[in-house]
Image 1 (tube, chains in turn blue, brown):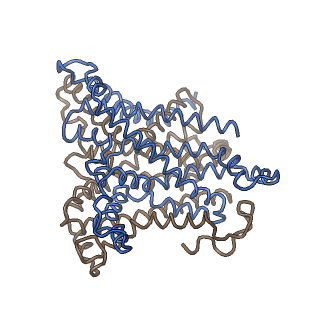
Image 2 (tube, helix red, strand yellow):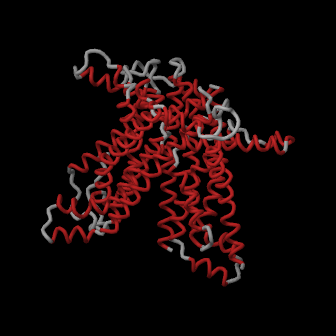
Image 3 (spheres, chains in turn brown, cyan):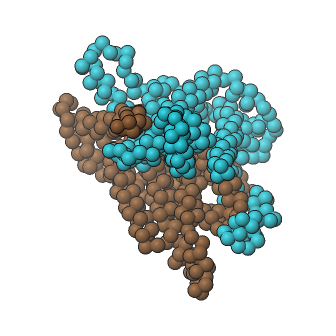
Length: 279
Length: 297
């Protein structure tokens, strides 16, 4: 059939690319993670045994998962009112306002983190403000180089992206539902609680995932503002490839990271769909 | 930001905004938060003109020296050239591959359609460090297999640490974005138009070229610009994969540590920030132009 050949010409190039440069590397990573056992040659689970046997790695992975959940939760929390404002109060200018909100998100992520380093440093703007207000007597070095600095900067970085799916979900809500709620005597807060919020949950879970997944693999922000106490699991992985040069261990760690990411995504995808069904 | 509400909201969206716009808690929150989002970037741009080497208030005086220094830095120029090459190559590849995939998935039913869509969007949920690790491991595994099977092919190997792997990873990262942007546009182009062209004697590819492509062009261009700017700014995989070569973000990162080079880095950063904001605005304008034009048609 003619269309079968057409489809082949359309689908084959992207399929080949993804196979060669995404699926095969993933398989290569799995293979690498099985190497480097005690005997040297051959395949085995030595890396996984090392990972699971050491409380340090598991603790780091647990802490990083927690930090990612906190960052994702806070981003959604801060982004929700922004998205709500755009969807319900944005009026004719909503597209422009959305662009204004999203634009910083497209500015180099490294530079946005770096800009915060300037803000939080001992000579930075935040210290200056606190000094001027008399809240501090001398510049505080602790604003920078801590896990809270990492969390604050990551939330800042992700808020524009978290707002987007929430905005999309809020936009899709049929306004007549809110009118109906008002006609039936619901106060604005009740209408929000029982109509708007449940209907926007798919967007909320999408936003959560959109932040959670990259934060799980995050290593750049800790490098810049984390200091020794603000390191994440991604920094451990990175050091296997740049310092320790233990590729099999780094590959195994990367796969463990994916093992955390996949269930969270499936869970949230299900949550989003369930609530969509109810609505 | 004073212009946010404007005095007269349009009647067209009266249903969405039933009352006159008035400053309320949500509007204040939005305004304050948006300003906060821009504040660090604005400070960075401000400090790029600061005559003092230390990034602290009060500003000592104004200068353009750091910009001149950045412009003359050979390291920066090389990194910029590398970044432009990688971004151009990877975004072109991603745009072509992603547009093909979007047309295939949206216009045809074929075995493996869902699989293609799933695999193509999977990179969205893989942290970039994992992608980089996979490419390193994958390239090394394939190379060792090649070395065993065909020792003569040394020169054909894909070096794990190179701008090539950086570019490849950027294509993989950009593919889902391109597919989403182009597919969103294709949904709005009726198939009837293509079919009419083919009834009038066009071949399938002729109809694509003369009907679908022109209608989808703004979206394709927007997808290209999105892919370009995401590659140009990408740090997570580039830092691991570039090896001894440097892209602009990895170069800037390497210079951040030296207090001496910092003002120059800040000046370069200011240029990148302003350029990125302009690029985002242009992309959005293009996308919206395309939408309104086809709505009018």
